[in-house]
Amino acid sequence: MADNLEWHTQVIGDLENSDLSYAELAKKYGRSRDTIIKLARLHKVLRRIPIAKGARKAVDMTAISPQHKALGTRLSIFRGTRNYSDAAAIIGVSRHVLKYMELGCYDFTLSQLNRISELLGSTLVEMTTSFRMSTPRGAPPVKHD
Image (cartoon, rainbow, N blue to C red; front, side):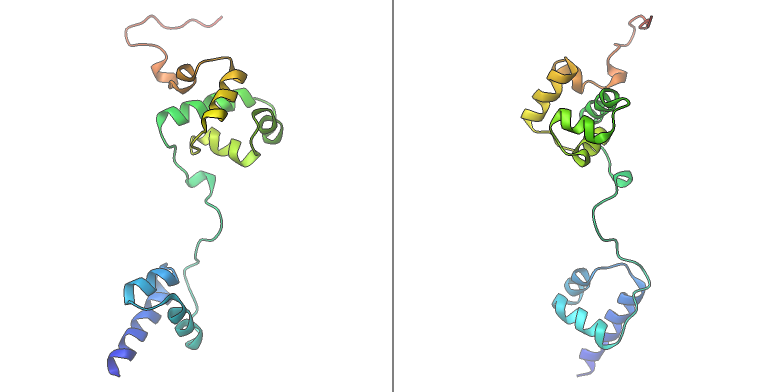
């Protein structure tokens, strides 16, 4: 019976001082998630470290690939002074999806890529080429009028 109480104190310590979820603690101690929740309620454990809930923040996301990032940059330029809702309606996606597209965190479908290439008036290869690769090494610098 003493072994039973020993894991209780360990779980309570982890609940108070770690950011592990109930499911992660259950896996760690070989118990069910419901058992960990009941133990926390029984001992009135106060979680000191807040648990992140909800959708991921756009700031925390990283681009899937350089090609996704390049296409996202081109979409940002296309959007220009339009708001997200208007630009998203033109492309045929939601404003949230457009934001993820611009960050390079969205995996495009083929139909979306076709629609975007029509809007931008370029090929898929041109759209996904990063800006630093657009001028080959040793080539003369591009002059803008």
